[in-house]
Amino acid sequence: MARTVLLPGKEKRVFTCHPWIFRSDIARVEGDCLPGDVVDIVSSKGRFLARGYYNPNSQIALRIMTYREDEAVDRALIFRRIHEAIEYRRTFADLKSCRLVFAESDRLPALIVDAFGDVLVLQCLALGMERFKQDVVDALAEEIHPQGIWERNDVPVRKLEGLEMNTGLLYGEVPDRVLMTENGVKFWVDVKEGQKTGFFLDQKENRAAIAPFVRDRTVLDCFTHTGSFALHAGKYGAKEVTGVDISEYACLFAAENARLNELEDRVHFVTANAFDLLSEQSRQGIKYDTVILDPPAFTKSRGAVESAIRGYKEINLRAMKMISPGGYLITCSCSQHVLPEMFREMVLDAAKDAKVLLRLVEFRTQGKDHPILPYARETQYLKCGMYQVFPMNG
Image (tube, rainbow, N blue to C red):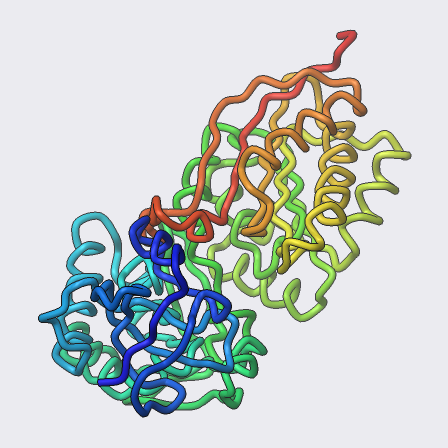
């Protein structure tokens, strides 16, 4: 087996158990290997550190699979890791509405597997994991016995790994739409054409947590996508819910989900730019008892964090001005580069400019099926703050 030798001092990253090693940390490669091959990772003095797959064309050149010198990275390891990932979720999760594999957090770097009803959706985001894709499919079929497994490898990050973007059937049969139930709310999921893998499962526990803040209240849900927060609000007894999304397709899909849950009398959807709608309704003096903000990631790089913070502050400031005294703001960010402390500070800055006082009720993160590695801050990407809002001079 070929081995990659790290520069002096760079082994410290391995000692902290971070699962990535960057191309700039590598001194040389000894032996023959192709991009995507499994290699040993050794210190500058030749000490074995770990074993992982190597791609010299990627900034993240090494992704660690094991720290044991006596553990082979092979089909058997993939089966064990898939089994361990699913066994972990069996202790607390509904396996028909769940992220079954969360990449590095499940010691399966760059692999995502989501379950919607009896269908699984798979993403391989690195060349090394792509080499094991059939092993992954076989392991999932043995462990879960799904109706079908669909590949959603249509993400640009694959190009950075030297991979093509593609989608398609990997196992069994997969319909165009899959019926899924989350927290008692039914959803149609478009696994073939919807965003990411078709539905954002990471907010599942946060959506359940909104129940006391929406009952008998008027609710505005911005960036509603296919209506996940809005429909939970309706299910939990909100008087009236307005969901907003810039995508007409998403709003039509959300309305269909409302009818599926017999909530179309109380949950409605508007196709609009959330920034513009908040601005216009704020000028009109329109108020809501609860406002939910769950925007897409405003930055995918560290270099754009400052701009992202400005965007988050703008929508939060506008939302705070529209909340009735004593109402609630549920505000989220899925930008991994916006750290939790940055997000909290942004919320406080927005409250100061909006001239409101906040009471922090709860600060949450992603669900337990998206486990966090304490060694890798990148794995804790979701922030969800729940605040009660009061006028400063009220």
